[in-house]
Amino acid sequence: MSQTTVLPPAAAPPAAPARVRGGSEFAPLLRTVREQGLLAHRPGWYARAIVLNLLGIAAVVAGLALVGPSWWALPLAVPLALFSARAAFVGHDAGHAQITADRRTSRAVQLVHANLLLGMSREWWNDKHNRHHANPNHLDKDPDVAADVLVFAEHQTAGRTGLRGFLTRHQAALFFPLTTLEGIALKAYGIRALLAKDGPCRTRRERLVEGGLLLAHFAGYATLLLALLTPAQALVFALLHQMLLGVHLGMAFAPNHKGMERPDQHEDGDGWGHLRRQVLTSRNIRGGALTDWFLGGLNYQVEHHLFPSMPRPNLRLAQPAVRAHCAALGVPYTETGFVDSYRQALGHLHEVGAPLRSGSVPPAGEGATLGGTHPVSAQELTTSPPAGRAIVRSAGGVAPSSTQRVSASNAER
Image 1 (spheres, rainbow, N blue to C red):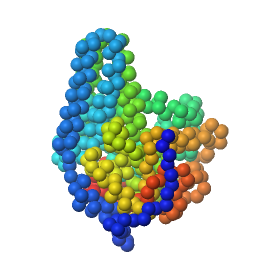
Image 2: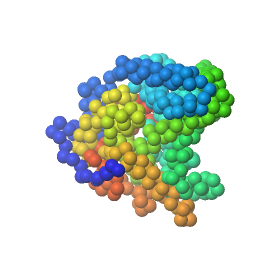
Image 3: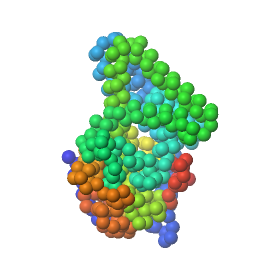
Image 4: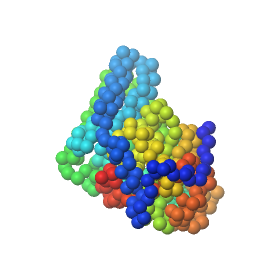
């Protein structure tokens, strides 16, 4: 298992940018990555990745046709889930304008990969994901940490009884089994948002395009499987495919923020600038090319949150500059190993469920302070990082708008 350590802030290298008094902590870093050309789009890289992934999906379909109506076709659900996850990562990147600056092209790429290939609403995802990027890990503003099947703070356990109480008590142990439903849940949430009168689709045309592509996905998916397999085999294959896709996506998203700092825990949290807000709430995962491929570049979560429109292959190239800048500012930069990242995330979920297991559920509104003691400021956090945190260096800015339809790349412009 990968071990993590807490180190004091590293000495700033001679070239590390200094914070201008009264200025933005983020601006010098932004200037550095721009000078290095790391915000330039990489359409060629993405074109190769998209073509290879589509060829992979086509190969799985060809394999299904060759195997025919046999239970031996079920193992092909594994590579199909892997290629489906790649499609999800491309859709994610297109939503952040990482592939191209042309909005129409980005929208078309995302519609094909999200709606047509995955059956997931583009507009619903962008609306939710942009709010997450604007205020990561903020219980009152980030939809990803709102109390739902899982809870992320002790006070969210109040009033959870019956099935929800059971899930909360054992949410750490049940996390991976629950992710098997994620692929189906993403489809269901998108359809519900599409049908809602106050959904994210701003025009009737958007709603028709989204709905038409979703219908095409479900009709095509069902027709393909039923044409190549028996009804029973098609149903089992679809369930296996969606369950594996859910686990894969859960593994990509789970370690990114769970157990990291929450701005709502800090008395000055709503005043954190862009760099501090993104760095303190994000966790990177160490690894090589295989990790980058498997997690779709989301293992560079700090860099991705600082520069949402930075192309995926440039994230690892930006890491040295981000680390150096963080060290100069003395703000924790968190990075850990692949296995240890899940240990930390699941450990946090286990800790949050403790009140229900012990029968000491806090009253609503309590539990919003660090360690259940007192709100702390960003200055206290910088000088005294919490024990057990996987800090390997030290990081810091201008926050994007917290409006519902915030552009996830505004901070770079």
